Every structure is written in C-alpha cells, then in structure tokens.
Length: 341
Image (cartoon, rainbow, N blue to C red; front, side):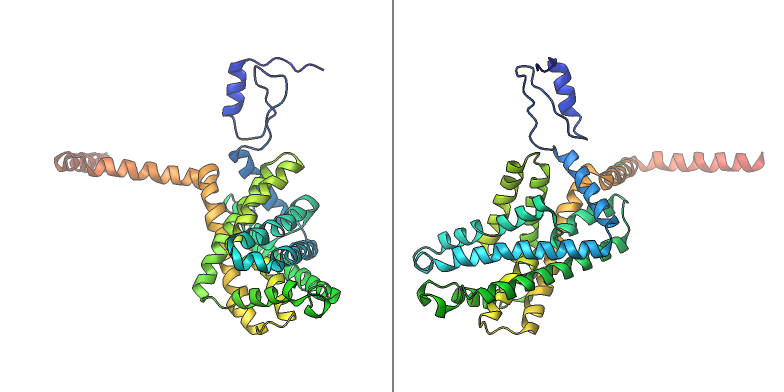
C-alpha cells in the first residue's frame, strides 16, 4: 500500500516538533525513516519510566532487582570465561585482553535486562531522579525503589556466584591451570578492593555515566537490533577501561572471594560496594538526569527564568547612578502622593 505523499514543508515542521516521536516520511521516499526517539522525546520516556517504577510495589521491584542481578552475573561469568582465560594475550597485549573482557559480558547482561525486563539499581538512579526533578515522584519513592532494587541486585548476584562456583568450571583442578579463569577472578577481586576510597568513587561516577547513557540509547531505539547496538559500545567501554559498577562488582568480587581471593566481606563492602555505589548514584542523578532536565525539562524553565532575572538586574545595575537616583525620587513622590490621597 502506497504511503501518502508528504510535502517538504510538512516534513520540516514535523522534525522541528521533537516533543514526541513520530513516523515521518522524506519527500523523496515512501518508506518511514525514523529509527530512534529524538532527545526531548527520549527524556519524556525516561520521566514516564521513573513514574512507572515509583508506582511499582516494593516486592515487585525486589524481584525485578533479583533478575537484574542474575542477568548481570551471567555477563560476569562470560567475561571471566572469555577475557579471563586468555593469559598469553594478556601478557603480550593487555589492551586486547581488556577489550575481550568488556566485549563479551556486560553488554550481553544489559541487553537481557532491557529486553526481558529487570530493575538495575544504577539505571534507576537516573530514571527516578528525572521524574523527581519534574515533580512526578516524591523523595520517599526514590528511597523505596533504590533500596529494593539494590538488595534484589545483590541477592541475584550472590545466587549466581554460588551456582557458577558449583559448576567447578573455574577450578584449576578441573582443567589446565595456565588456562583457567580462577586466578584472574582472584586478581580481579583484589584489584577492585585495593584502590583508594576516593578513586573508587570517581570510577563509580564514570562507570554509571556510561551505563546510564547505554540505557538511554537502548530506550531511544525502536527495534531490538537498535537496542542491542545502543547498549553495546558504552557498556563495553566502561568495562574495558576497568571502571567500577556496583552491580557488576556484586558478581566479580564475591566470585573471586569464593575462589580464594584474600578479600574479606568487610573489605569488599567498605573498599568497593559503598564508594562505588556512591559514585554510581552521583552519575545517574547529577551527570545524566540533571543536565537533561535542564535541557528538556522543568529545570530548564527555571534556569531560563533565573537567567532572565539576572539579565534584567544587570541592565539596571549598569544604568547611570543619576538615573537610578531620579527613579528613586520619583518612586518616593508617588508613594507620598498616594498616602495624602
């Protein structure tokens, strides 16, 4: 069936109206061309997602969080299997090994979360905060959602740690020790709990900055291939750079501990979980949700209002003092006249 011909003027008008997604046609083509949401429409989708998550009962958020922890842990196991068992490449070219570790793992887990449905604590810091900035949710909604999602993520990750360990696939006695991911898991657990506290916070900021953008790119896509592509590059980048994501580390670090890494539970919580979670939250709230609210949401309207007032104030302050004094005298005279009347 032929598509109705669209005039160039109408097409341009529809592209300028980016408040919501539309299927538009080029005047030279009969095929719809839009493949992703424009940024303003994407931000509206983020707000609606935050509203939906605020309305979700805590027990459903907990269950969705468990699923997210499971899916991310599947990804962690894949990363250890591929990137953790290329010792020759790691010694000769560590950059390639890091690329393999990032390429085969986290993008797969994040795609499962987005396509199949699950609640990732770090993504919710962006969604819920955006909805909060727009006045759609209350602060207690944020607390309820974040706590339930975080605990669910941890429970799901630890469950997969136990299951994967029971397979014995990463045990040195089950295969050639030189080709085992067990040693790499131990090293990873030590490395991810050894950096200074402040450095871990910064790593957490950068990690969830990229992960939140991966989530947004996937939401902008209008088909499953686009969602996978949108997820892939940012999540690959953060893992290859060796940044820290609190939910990913919920598998990587405990699995290394389970396989003999000299890291205590207290060390893991204090040197990894707490600072990384703080950094991840800062990124989702202030490095992703905040700028887009200023650009496309209610915070932007407030900024424009403040800017207008500041500009008006600057104009008044630059007027000659003589004119300002005359305005003051005129104001006093009018007030006196009103009192006498």
